[in-house]
Image (cartoon, rainbow, N blue to C red; front, side, top):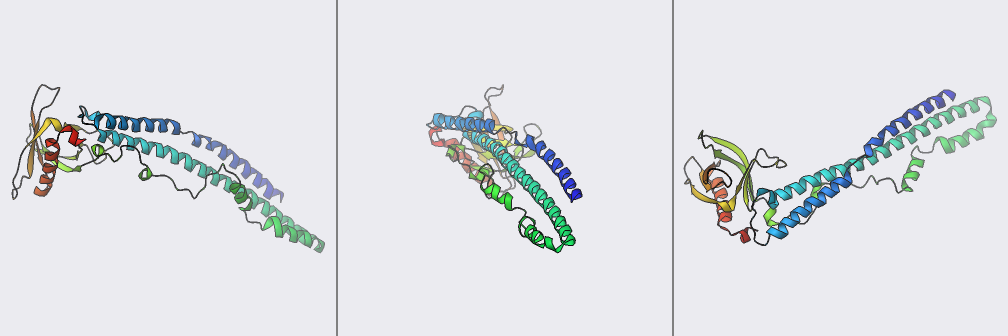
Length: 289
């Protein structure tokens, strides 16, 4: 008994030390992330309120599509912080449950040893042995823990699922000006080398973007403002080029006009891009919003 209780005491002290070291798990920046989320949603709402009435977007930073992507990224960071704290509380609760089980299990072992001693010493101790076995020894190890958890509002209900970004809705999320009209791989002809480079392109209501990869969390590497572009010719069906031309001017540079040649994997894909861009470049700013 003494050895059992001594070992239990040592294990208990070690477990308490481990629990104290978990204090750092509860340091989060949830409030800061929530504030960032509010600001990102407000920025999207402000642009939609101001630009949705017919004004065009002069810079890609004001495009609702990019602002919506920024909101999505910020919500992911906020949800990560929330779920981190959520999981930290669940981990702490599990640690306390293990501690409770360890204490109860050690005490049960001590009681069982004590019961065996009494039984060997005298048959008169039978009633005491039976009482010990009927109550503390065979009580479920989580009996007190379950009672404690169910009567304490501090603990998080483990049946509550973790949140995901799919469950989040915010103003402007589904506005047509913030949506992706078409996305996929296109090849763009180099101005000097005359070869084609494959890129991932996204068409919004106001811009044609090129992203470095399928991960749209990063800023686009090229942005073509559609009101400043006009469609040129496209290849005919049955050929092997599957190309179309987009012409425009680069504001702020030394060249006032530039021509981009794009190539798709098939004629149908090329025509789908061509027709979507044609609709958008033919529309007035009020129609695009």
